[in-house]
Image 1 (cartoon, helix red, strand yellow):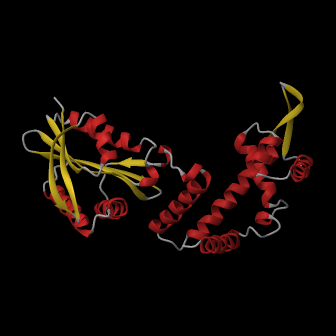
Image 2 (tube, rainbow, N blue to C red):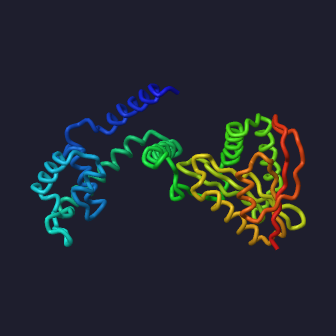
Length: 310
C-alpha cells in the first residue's frame, strides 16, 4: 500500500468517525461547551491535580487558546485554582462540584451514544471494533507501536476458533520469516489433531496470549509416555516480541510441568529458529540431536532439545 493510499484511507476514516460521533458540531451533546473545552475538563478530572502546562502538553494546544478556555471554565464555576505549595505564583486545577456533575453527565451521554452506534452489531462484531481501536491506539501512541504486557491476556481455556488461529499464526509467520511453504501449515494441522486426539484435560494445556481479540502468542504442553511431556507451538507474533511475553508463556508452561511431575520435557525445532533456541537454552533445555532433513521446501537440521525436570 502506497503512502498516499494510507493517508487517503486514514482521512476517509476520520471523516466517517467524526460524523458518527457528531464531533463537527459546535457544541458537544447540545451543551454550551465545545469538544476542546470538554477535553480540558476531562484532563483536569482524570489527572486530579494537573496544571495548565500539563494540559497543554497532553492536548498539544496553543497556550493562549488554553488560557481563554480556562478563564471561561473558571468563570462558569466548573474549575477551581489552588496555589502550588512549592510555587505560590503557579496553580493546580481541580473540578468544582458543578464541574464533576457536568463530567458525569457527559460520560453518561457519551456511553449512551456509543451503545446506540454499536446496537446493530453482534457482540463478536463489537469486540472486533473495540479490538481494532485498541490496536490503533497502541500503534500510534507507543514508540514504534510497541505493545506492553498489560495489553495482553493469557488464558488456557480453548474456545471455538482457537485451534484454527494457532494454525493460521504459524502458517503466516513461518512463511514470512523462513519462507516455509504450505506443507508446514499442514504439519501444524497434524500436530493439532494429535494433540486433540490424545488430549487429557488434567495433563495437557495450551496457553494463548490474546491482545484486542487477536492471538499474538502461544505455547502448549502435551503429555507423553513414561512421564514425559512435549512442548509445542511456541510462537510470538513479531509485534509482541521483546516485552517479556515469551518469558511469561515459558514460565507458566514450566510451572505446569513441575505441577504434573513430568520427568522430562522435550521439543522439536530446526537450526533456523536460533532466537527461540537461545530462549530454550536459558530455560535449561539441552540440544540432544541434530539430524539433516528436507522439510517444508528447505534443507535444514531437525533438532531435539530436552530438559530434565526431576
